[in-house]
Length: 340
Ligand code: GDP
Image 1 (cartoon, rainbow, N blue to C red):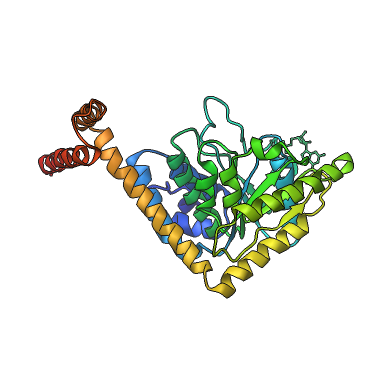
Image 2: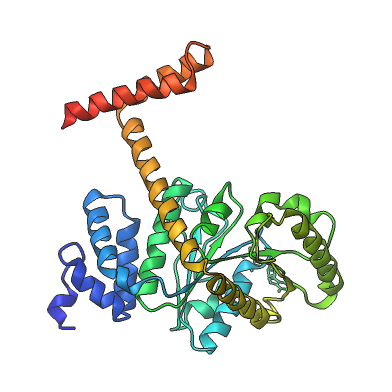
């Protein structure tokens, strides 16, 4: 690539930057993710042009979500798992969804200090969670960053999250496989985790199954097997395996990778892999649309005041939710007519 073109700003020539990303230039990837994370309207437009140019190069990666309470060993696990995959010839990107990150200091940093070896490995790319915002906003940016990483040739994308609000659900909606890490010890754990998480899991791995923890890890595994048996939805054809592993000792990691591949084969054989990704795309579009429509109301002072008035009327028993929405839609349409 000639020097002059390397200095072309990303806003001026998204197509050129798309080529640089596909060519595997890390600096171009980092710059593109920063663009995707920006709120400026001109940045948003350029980011969409860039993503559109890159679409043909996306979709080939294994997309894996990883969750677990703080201290379960996520970063230790991701470091060991990532290094194992790189050793086997893969390129691994690690992204995070943590809506509590940013000013308040989140629980996921996704940063270099947590994954010291992986972060300096040329086969890995680690990017912390986009700064605090709404969960939907943070997730949308991570989703777009995932596409950029795929275009840059990363064939395994690990998306880490902690159980903040609905973050697990949101991450499970952008990946092919959702891995839940649990702690050894049976009995109390189920109370510490949200029951809904078991329904999202494609696999549970009881981590830290090393040294004195091994007995407790086996007990926890039987516990979760029984719990999954109860929560498994009718008609579901994949029974989430419950495995033991130790990120610290590097044990059980290749079995986890085998199961991730078995799950993919299962979906392909069943003919549901494409359908799953397509449904995710449609739900993503719909959630962007909902955010956009809500934004039209909440970012307009008059409409916001009208919405608040209707909320008060609703509580006072003067209107119904459906009539309130009718009135608000009339006000929105009038506002759109005025501005067009
Ligand atoms: P995270 O908060 O989920 O990212 O957890 P960390 O990876 O930072 O680990 C939390 C603590 O658990 C650290 O003190 C780690 O050394 C320890 N730890 C992580 N993985 C393992 C493991 O596989 N076995 C044992 N025994 N300890 C671990």
